[in-house]
Length: 254
Length: 228
Image 1 (cartoon, rainbow over the protein chains, first blue to last red):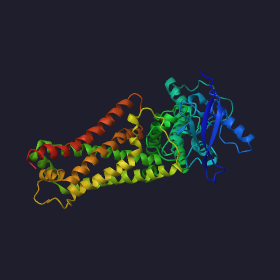
Image 2 (image 1 turned 90 degrees about the vertical axis):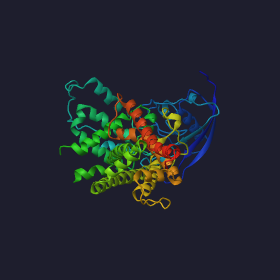
Image 3 (image 1 turned 180 degrees about the vertical axis):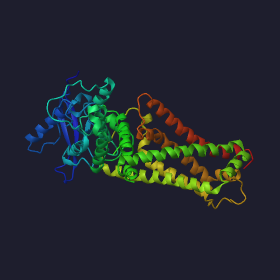
Image 4 (image 1 turned 90 degrees about the horizontal axis):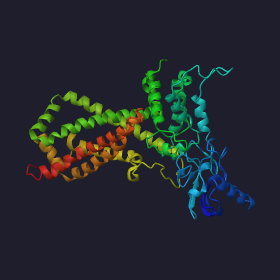
């Protein structure tokens, strides 16, 4: 693999605060190592900006291992950049070409207000989880793991849904800024497990109500979320949420 | 009553209602097309069908009310959801590129459901003006048997243009709508997803071409054959 340094032009959304007017600003980097991750490239830019006495670009990041769900960024119009099933922190500069211009924007959704530059407030997801994304268990010693048998294929499906890292790429990529893939992944993962069964009706109704209250759009089955999801969560989960919702609304016992 | 009305309080419930009404309207399209295809059989068959259908007027009125409610709820709920969906974005992206690689020629019919739906609505209104309300000034409706009326309308230029555009856009609406409504109703499984996509597409094409063929037939075959 080539170690040839790259010249990259960045057009980055800069916005001083939630109420401030934002704008794109252009930065040139002439010495980009192709083995850098996208975030490391931004680190290099920020070091330069700090050395020049300018305000560094604010962006979210944490584990940089593709598992925490903190990194975001709309890169050239695509959530987490051009690669499938890849978070921004795992996207490397070698996937761009020398001389490229890269447009970097924050997630844009009314429910994800911009905090600063590329950082958005994703606490709407936390409030959806608090509304029903849990199972209630008694504290104390952990029960013996195999007391409740779970069929293998059910466990696999639950684990597939549980892969959701809550990054918000689904909302960012959806033309309706809909959070249905996120909510459906959480509803599915808990519903599929026996531990999640007792609260399944209340869960889906409350989580959907909170999703609506946060101002996310509705689903129009464009499947853009599935394509943008760094964890490859399937829209099959959205169909499951719809079934859960119908069942809870029409067939609940109480 | 709250059990009946509460589903409409959420976006998911409203979308399910859009899917249900859409499914029922698809059923109407099938019946309507089947009846209209009798035009191909000849004046006797078509006139007999039309007279039989309208032989008991109270039943027709009930059907009209039900159809009106289906259309109205489908349209009102879909427009309401579309407005909400548009608002949910807030400020627009400077750049937006799909990550889906399974679109045919990159066409995004699913992004055009509101515009295609509104075109179909305009087509529907023209169709009602033409056939139900009989308001077209350029057509003398009196004394026309149903078959003659259909031919007179289908060979007039506003109808040719309106119905050609209308039926093709209806096909585009159904191309996404038919498989999409099944997903909304929770019908999705790897075992039959490919089948749904294929049959949904086939349904859209058959309905669109079926209605469009009536316009073609009236102008090129029947008209050319000297009956019109």
